[in-house]
Length: 50
Image (cartoon, rainbow, N blue to C red; front, side, top):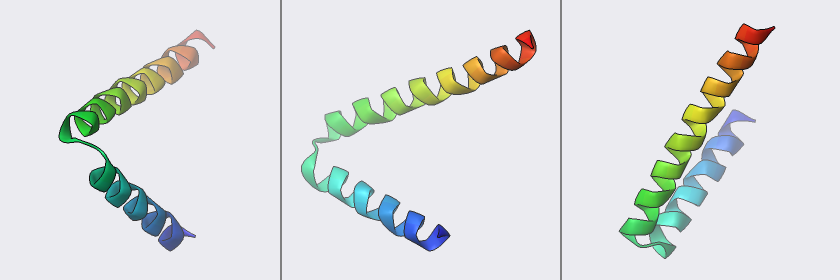
């Protein structure tokens, strides 16, 4: 299962690099960082409320 995940991630990364401009990739990285940060913040704050 882990190997399939690694292969799938590799394919996606290669496709993104192949078909997107550097600026698009930068935006995707920033959005991911914002979403990931928001996800951890939300889960932490929900935990604190319980």
